[in-house]
Image (cartoon, rainbow, N blue to C red):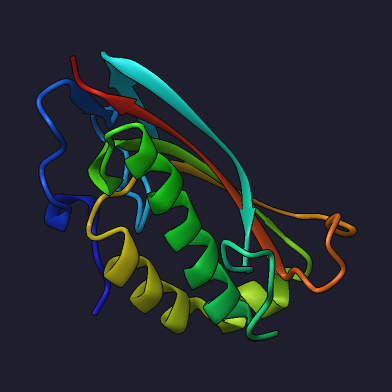
Length: 144
């Protein structure tokens, strides 16, 4: 089942999805977001646990752990996944990312829900941790 922006959960009242008239609805992300409140910037999270241990080399499972790490850091500021307004995904291999898309979608919905921030995904030559397959950074705005 493909999710469109129309099926997304309504954002908090201080967060506005920016969707130009006549543009096709993006799938799994937003083109832009305007928000008001306390900004929380979350550095790149990779697929290891809080003790810096990897439990898998599977791309989708590393992404799940990175998303869980983002949610944990955000919770320290009193935020929730629906407050995330931007994510940047750095992947080692775009083919691996695309092949894992169904599993990524499932992991994303289970950890983040049906909130679709503005997103960018880029393929990079490498990450600082050799075992990491993906790194995700996020920005959130917690309404006042």
